Image (cartoon, rainbow, N blue to C red):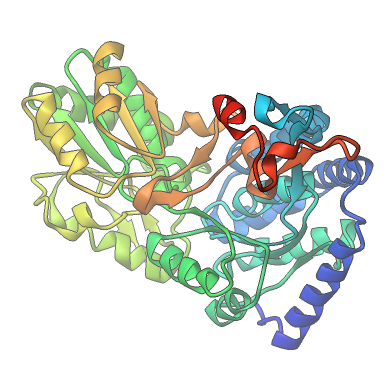
Length: 460
């Protein structure tokens, strides 16, 4: 069932109520923030089955994958914030130079205010609610905008949020890009957007009119390098898992392979075997294999298959929006499958003779959200030194996102700003510099006619 657009008048009324709520100071106390985080965590437990059912209906996502990649990440983030919130909120003392003594210097973490959080459809629970943890922790109000492409999830989240939070504190609005356009035209204190680089540019352009700070979690073509010295079976298994998780609809999924020429044949064999172990002889029959989100996505991703020689997979079913995990060879580097983010289970493969060729290929393109290297650790560190990406794994894929002690975010075309853990708290906070000067003590050298300035000059 199609989602109804939230009327513009309703959006404006909610924004006004949230502005009044924030200005009242109700969201500022540590006790309030902790209470809201605990309430949020309890709701995720109570709504677990309904959220998992919604993810199955919209994406054919199994309960196990839903818990692994969506709910557990949000709950882990909440627990992390509850453990560390007091320390993050505490004023941070900084040294004061001799010329400013006896003043004291410190940094205060203050909430930015009204937050707008706009999420995509591929991880519709995690990517909407994980940033909300940071907004609550920092002391902000939040307007949430789920994706209309996963309507069951969007309605379920709206019902959950309505049950646990007052709407002047956290509210959900629904709709298509017309609603997005309305939201981006409005003035917010911070916008947190997850989506494509093209939409990220539109968000940044709209935010610039109000000088609103933005966190942009975008995507791009994340390379995966398989070098000499790699354990082929391990590399194939971890790449196959990372590429077929959520049917490749993951912003940090391996988007293309660069394999040393001597390893191409054994890698193809190992990759095929790894897929069979993960999803069986026919992935369509697997209860753990996700479908493409809609017909448009299916047609786009299926259109990449003829752009190379199919070595593994290649079968599709439009009625089910099913695309078999597919490995392509003999791909033109200028073809759309090598220029556009695939966001599906199709993996093009190129070969290289020297690692310099692979590095040159990666650095000749936009900076990716993730980079994966399989091979000797020392060689991998050298590849990282010579390249740039939002995050990276040596001898694995995807798993850097599972560590809430590591910030997550892009660089260049793949985004700006970071979150997870303390970075989530800081994404919705302003670090305010404060100098406290005693009122009874005044140094005369700062005022004209600057008596004794030749002595003062020595400490400047």
